[in-house]
Amino acid sequence: MTTQTTEPLPVVLAGARGHGRSHLENLRRLERLGRARLAGVCELTPLDPHELAGFDAPEQSADFAGLLRSTGAAVAVICTPIQTHTDLALTAARHGAHLLLEKPPAPSEAEFRRMADGVAEAGVRCQIGFQSLGSHALPAIRDLIASGAIGDLTGVGGAGAWVRDEAYYRRAPWAGRRRLGDTDVIDGVLTNPLAHAVATALALNGTPRAADVTGVRTELFRANAIESDDTSCVRVHGAYGTDVTVSATLCAAENTAPYVIAHGTSGRITFWYTEDRVLLQRAGHGPEEIQYGRTDLLENLLDHLAGHTELLVPADTTGAFMRVVEAIRQAPDPRPLPADAWHRVPGEGAERRVVRGIDTLVAAGADSLSLYSELDAPWARDTEAAPR
Image 1 (cartoon, rainbow, N blue to C red):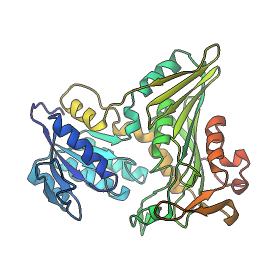
Image 2 (tube, one colour):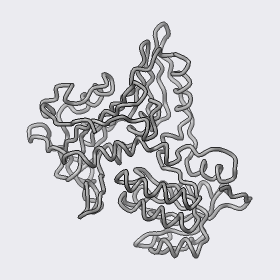
Image 3 (cartoon, rainbow, N blue to C red):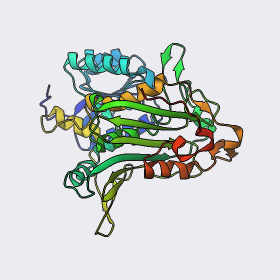
Image 4 (cartoon, rainbow, N blue to C red):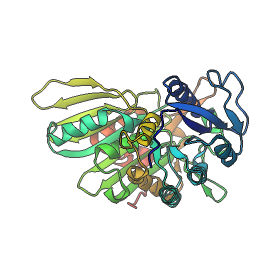
């Protein structure tokens, strides 16, 4: 379905606070370009004039379906709690609105399938909000790998070491939860804050779809007093001979830019995906660092609806990521780290917990394609993480 029009398309944003503020800022940019018009905002508490500065009084309501009807929205941007994604996406699809759906798209494979099937049946387009997959570095790296620049691909590693204080888990009722009552949430380090590391590594490995995955091994831990995991690693077995191994934590000593590494028999390519920066290291050459640009995913969706290009992140290209989400959902609850494995340090708004040596472990995991238990982390020994 294409939408041929020279008028800016009306957009409804569901979830305009927290990460949703970045979507508001992007919509301001697209309005200035004449590409989109913020027609409505769905929030439980209406935004104040300061929050809506630069917009022409969009309609506000907590009734998403009603807002879609009254605004005639052509596009819905959904940036709400994980467990609400599927129902809101299907509501938008029933009203004929195309979608930019924030990551993770769903808290389980069943919910993902229900969403994807319903959207397809409605005939609308759905872009999943893995912004790193809009980086121009990705096709460039794929071309380098295909040309043999680093020899044969042997695997892809990922590393994410971020700092989050204890208040981070008090920001919302679903934060740091595996489930709310009988409803899955799965708000863990690999499934939400550092989900891009997993999705980007899977894309570089050439295994983005569910059928590309033959098994998933997880090691899930937590230093914080939460239900979900904050320090974890995962190995995704690819169907074509190479695996993805990603290590991540929200209990780092220092915030660092997350990255993925494509390992080859004669070199490696490191991609800092939040910075669109690439380092190529290969035998017989000096290191080459390249800076790339990025295509905004909402802008790409608008271009796709106008018939100008293909979607960068259609739902089916996140199927392998959802296999990881499902494996984490089905895994035993994360193991609490022993008290001597972490310590508290002051944070900006609250104390935070730092796992001793975790920054080095995360980097070593990506560098050697190893899990924590394989790196002899004392708290990861005897980890029961059978492939799923």
